[in-house]
Amino acid sequence: MEMKGHKKAILTVLGIIVALYTLFPFYLVVMNTFKSANNIVSDPVGFGGISFSQLGKNFSSVVHNSNFNFWYAFGTSVVITIIALVLLALFGGMAAWVVCRNKTKWSSAIYMTFIASMIIPFQVVMLPLISTFRDVGNFVGLSMLQSIPGIVFAYCGFGGAMTVFILTGFIKGIPYELEEAASIDGCSPEGTFFRIIFPLLTPVITTVTILNGMWIWNDYLLPSLMLGQNGKIKTLPVAVQAFVGSYVKQWDLILTAALLAIIPMVIIFLVAQKQIMNGMVEGAIK
Image 1 (cartoon, rainbow, N blue to C red):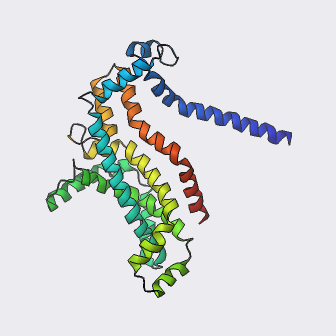
Image 2 (cartoon, rainbow, N blue to C red):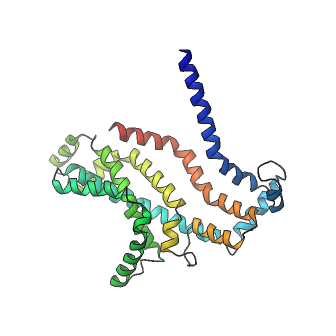
Image 3 (cartoon, one colour):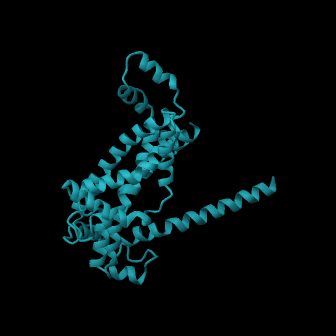
């Protein structure tokens, strides 16, 4: 019993150390938004120079800065994230249901293709992706690059694998008798999915949506490649990077811009962390 107590104490201390190490960068960002540039340079870690009036000044300077264009970048990120999440939840649920219920070799092959695509690094496909989108856009007469529909389509492709993987595991635990009863009552396959299956997927879809949402919102590499750093359409991470390039030494503005970019996802995660864990646990049990 004494050995178990020592082991638990050691694990607790290690957990605290890891937590502090993880939270330290966030602490630096938050703490230094209350300071001026000179105070950040002289005392970046301590509490010296903290002022709520300086915080308001920093926020005002960043939000109203024409080089940052915060509200436009914020709105662009919101539009891209919401559209991509809705499409991922809808088409991911459909694909997972079809793959799970159709017991054929083709279904198994398609499912394994989804799984295999999850292990391919994005860096391997990013250059072929850009050239393919450019060629497809020229063929259909639409701009797939530097456009919101193009990047939403890309996010659906990259996020579809994990979405289908998680939803398939959950659907396997749904009794097939529910679908048979709906079919006997004259319900079409589309009606069965939207009236029976999709409502049952709500907990795990919530989890997948939050995970995909944090990834899409914070993603920098894909928007910088598809939208361009100097293009008119910029997501919040790309706008922050461009803003940092304009103000290399003004750390008060740079850190405030970074905090504005991460605040929405921090709030959403803190509010929905219970739903995330419940959805993951239910999916694992299923």
